[in-house]
Amino acid sequence: MLFNYSRNNLSRHDQRLERIFEIAPGALSWGIIIGMTILSVANPLLAAAMMVAFVLYWVLRLIYMNLFLGISYSRLSMEKETDWLELIEGMRDIDALSCRLKARAKSTSTPAARISLAIRRYQIDAVKKTGEGTPDPSDIYHLVILPVAREPRDVIEPAIQSLAEGIYPTTKVIVVIALEGRACEKVKQEVYALQRHYMATFMDFLVIEHPSDIEGESSVKGANATWAAKHVAPWLGQKGIAYKNVIVSCFDADTVAHRDYLACLTYYFMITPSRTRASYQPIPVYYNNLWEVPGFARVIDIGASFFQLVESTNPEKLVTFSSHSMSFKALVEVGYWPVDMISDDSAIFWKSFIHYDGDYRVVPIYTTVSMDIAGGDTSLQTFINIYKQKRRWAWGVENLPIVMRAFLQSPAISLYKKIMFSIRLFDMFVSWATLSFLLVIITWFPVFFAGREFVTTTMYYMAPRIKDIIFSLSLMGLVVCMIISLGLLSTSTARLRLWQKVIHIFDWLAIPVVILALSSIPALDAQTRLMLGKYMEFKVTEKYRTRRD
Image (cartoon, rainbow, N blue to C red; front, side):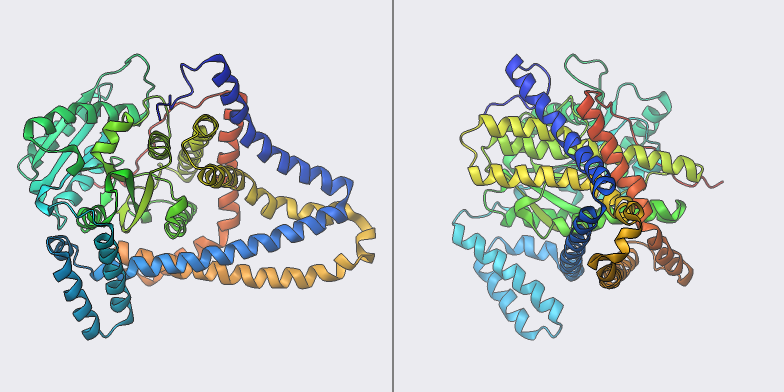
């Protein structure tokens, strides 16, 4: 479908339609918060009953999320021992590979290994049934784009080094630093020094400078990445490399890929039917500078990792987030990343989904990419930087009006997908902005405003029992989160010391306030700006590392 995936250059009719859906999420979020506050004053008993029902719903949702968080974490843990290179080479003869995996499953003693092998056999059998075949492993190349604006060398180099030290052959990897032309001279010198240092390590190492003030572009990461990708396209043609055999990964400059990342990605690319019609989403974690930031910063970003772990269990509704990968063929066909939107990571999924009339999806891959937690020289500056970063993440709501406009105009996308994704979009953004307000603040309003008459009601006698049940279930959920976060930290960073474990457990006790201040309020801020037409501009998140002499 030919569709203008932008809020700019629209007809008058499309502008009105766009504006309606820009207002909708913010209006709905504010309506819920203000409406429940007014109801707490006007009819406290009704408000109390509604809040009890809401809290019970939230507890059930928490149980659901903890269940699938555990499943996803278990899946991530299972894949640690997978030999991805063996699987990739084995795909040359799928029947023989299937037989080897079957024989290995009989001799494997651990349940985790048996489950992992069963998953592999199921995936490979599914490939055989499609009859599509798989590409030759030697034909597949990786293009990794790292947009850089003002990041120093000590932030960029670990990302490049992780690719160099990965298990996938670097002779099949092209690294591109998409360098903003407006970057300062020191950043440019460091980038070209990195190019000279790592040039011989990879198939090629390109630095492509993105000019400033190109007509139709905004100062956003997507414009930089798009400029770089467009300049790589003819380079691939000169090398005789088919676009369909190139997997492009767009990483933040601080993204440190797990050593298995490119190999795991290659395997999933090979076994995915209609592989060029899919994006591939790893699990993002924020561990690069974990112990250099305050506790509230650790908890909020580990929570973001948890959200992605839960989302990975439902690929039918999964949307790309942060660092992700896709076929270069699809990237070219859909017209690259949007050049005038902040949320390029999710926008490229929706742009592809609409271009292919709904025949596009996200495949979760169970390996990690680690990034920096936003920080600062003081706790206050860290708080401010994280707030701005989360507001920028929440600005992903800018996709909602564009997607809804596309749904109304595209007869080719199935009605089921339109309804499913529309509900998901509204639920995600409205819940993001309102849940913490309702749980942390507004649940107390009915009791406060009810006065003495509340004592004579049935609700008064039921409330303590309901509260005890809710508290117990919530505490269980919190304990699960603590255990899984400690497990993730132990596998993704150096072995935790006892004092670090104790500190991290206490970090979680502040989670209700942290989520309100650094998740719901930034989300409500972003939705309010969109509702009022006060469009945000892209700001590079400060990458903070402790300076050591």
